Image (tube, rainbow, N blue to C red; front, top):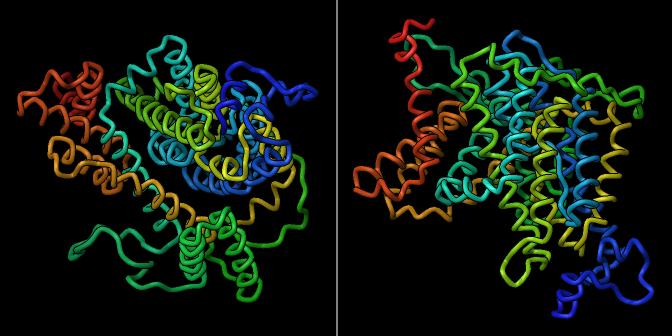
Length: 483
């Protein structure tokens, strides 16, 4: 972007004869065109549209405390609706080429950490509370304070740990690895395939999907994840039609009778704001909200800065334009995700695909959001994807999140050890909360024994104290006679 264009953008000036839409979005002032914005909108949608498949599968494959599951078709509707609305609102209110949808990693927390402790409506109520808390933090200016309290290396370690956790979920749910029953003589907790070896057509579909996905990623093909999902779904449909396989899992790959159907809004508004407090301990609820908050909080900050920097929209001081509104809209997206039972919605790094096509303004969001709105009517087509075709995307996303490990200083033990524990404990205990707690406690402990306790922010001390109670909850309950 030229200096003249940057000045024009900051001043809000527009060239003579520019349309009202051009002036509102500052399309010409930011060195873009309507054609680039439209292409960027399409690129972003096709790069992140996989969430319409993955989010229903991740949430739909989990059971709450009472054994209930969420309906797949209703999840597709909720996911598409929130993505459409919040992406358009971000475009109009934030004027950045930044699309939003249900966050991977966040939905894993909801599905595998929160739902087993309470009902689905209670779990989604926690997501709403987390979103409201983010909005409060933005309004009070505390979001930056909390961000500065946690060392950058620990933030990166949390993302890496979540990436490994997501990849592990993909391997397990696709049947590539399976849990071994706890019997005498068992030497490992998981094994290859269902019997110690790979077998069956569904697992073959997964393996081919992983190979295809990594090949497309290596060649930097835009929409690699979506292309892989669609291709392997077609392969699965062909295989199923020939072999009539009964073991695909929750979703059988069959061509639906109807491709277009009316959206199903049954999950919209199905949440209980404070019901979780009656299902588990207050400490557990607070820690679960904190886990959601932390993941949403820092992923958004990194994504917003990364996308605007790539688009050349940062000012001379490195500040993001309209940052307050952008963060507030992102917090509102978390609220909308919980209120619709589609999990917390957040800003997507895949928006970089649209920026790569030339998008520089929120006008591209109108295109991306519009395409998500069209997807509302394609539910039958989107619910034929088997887990074996979608799981390779989880492995790929795990790899993408893992790349942040290179930014951690592994020579400096006072940060390397907490980072390692954060990364390792998440997949090994199948718990994101456990990983964060282990890392925080190790960080505080090591800083203390090195005589550097004053370097630890008071917010981190307080959070670590909560985690200490969390890990010791059983003896604490016994001490006070709580069952």
